[in-house]
Length: 221
Image (tube, rainbow, N blue to C red; front, side):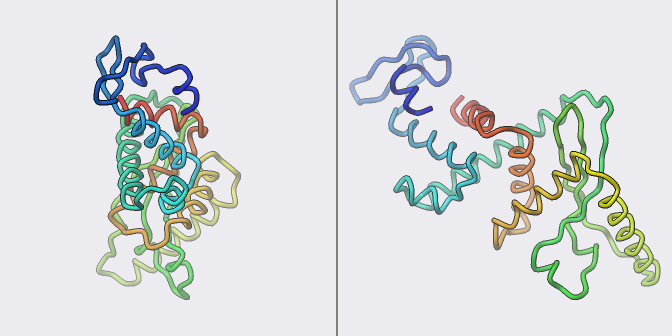
């Protein structure tokens, strides 16, 4: 991708011809967009690393960049992705939509002898038009009656087990994909869970080359 741009020397926004300014920056002859080609090339490599599931530390070492610089880029990509997916969700045609609830436990929670669904992250997934969408829901609230809580948890556990064993749906495939991929983010802060969820949704829905093109448009344009 980077080599293509170098050889063709076109504007990343409108694909028009570029010329070089006195300070070394490039300027588009059509849309007047100005940018540093070296920085553009660097940012594009970071985007490609992100889409290829290369973590921020590995990316910083490979590109010889400051770790915090790359980490900030990754965090920005996740924010852009979340907004992008929200727009798709809002504009989708909900024909033949299916949905499922999912309760996510961290690896540490799974290792507990006793764990409660009230500790889990509550997610609703939708499948429509060949894409998976997720909504992060409030955690389950306990009632004042202990016996009711126990019975409710038993029902949810039974429902989840029956649903899991029923048949493979795109959403069930996604839940497995989500759990597997979130294992990579050890020590993830609770307030950042939403953005990692959206990253998984994005990478599940789109191929790597599609991810790169989408991120290019979100980040550069």
